Image 1 (cartoon, helix red, strand yellow):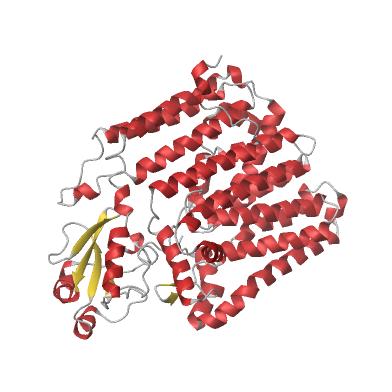
Image 2 (spheres, rainbow, N blue to C red):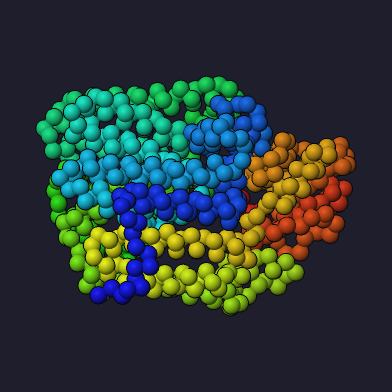
Length: 567
């Protein structure tokens, strides 16, 4: 029997599963807005791109540090601009946007469950809770990245694909599928096809109607593809013409082919995603009942289950062939995974009140709490032997013991939450995971290592120097970390790297009042006017006359592997 104090985290009363998850997303978004800053390299870079487009008044071609930015299409930047047009420039809207996209995905999953299994309304209540209880999903609902936007576009396109096969108006569904697929291209490029093409090609297999095996199915797929291409080209062709020949070549050819054949960064082995799939579903993947539910749904042969298996596994196989791999690339497959797991639970109706295996997910939270306690009481990794070690002693050092105890307590409560009557157990655990993710993120980003990601003081200093007419250059590859954070109105010239401008000596002769930013390790060079911690390293701001005499001998450009190349 569950203990009385296991009701400390009951499900919200009189709310659907989707509404409960949205309330949790709202809590996480407010927590992130109140307690943390945009993180380099990715968040600061994307905010800087949006900021430069806004300042230039050019909403066609993205720019980064004064150069056309071909790595990502503009849909996320346009959404940021839409919020700025209403409420003014700031970081509130861009940082609230991921939570809104996550909420849209949750409601799409709910709608999909109703469309796939109209005779089983309980699935539409449980599937959002399973998605919203994934720690991986919750973590990325607080970061400004492209993957949640892509996941939402894929889910809406997949919903239209199902309606194209099962609905009464297949041609209208084909148009909708093409529209959402095209928006997926504008969200993150042609990678959206890795999620949609398996569904298109397998239509005659998962569709239960004979009409899917005829020419009409392929005609509808062709129509959707034409619409998607048209939506993408409406932006891509004018942008290529406006951005110049180099930008057009990178946008239309090199970015996609380079990532498929030989990734610019994040090269991983073929089996990389197979290892990460269980981690995407923590804490559910530690619960034996969840594995029993998946085993039950494997034996089902209905069209909806076949459709969802293709949606979930087809992209994993396709993306495994691509050389560049990151865990967040799999965010779009969490939606079909939640639907399949909810369907499995509807088949097994687990007796959670007597579930002894519920202790396993709880061990995860207890373990996290113990690790945080180790750091809170000063037993984290020993600092490196240099004067600046206090800035980067690790992700455990300086964590709050109160937050560590709270995480440990939530982990201890988790087994009792799962032993509540079904399906309230899922709702209670989803609430607990939201709080645990909030505590974990806060602890990590306010640890000794997390504090080294705060570039706001240095960005403010650079802004003041630019306002006084000084040029501030960067020794190495600069990725826009300071642009939006400091609201800079001028680029930061690179003295090394792919877009290098004049060399250091030329800058010293032409502008003796300029400054140079240097990234490095160990002891910073003497004469720096400011030294700031940065991601286990430091950034030093040097007058150009000092930099010209010391940098070529004392510093080296950052290694390629740590250069922050686009994911």
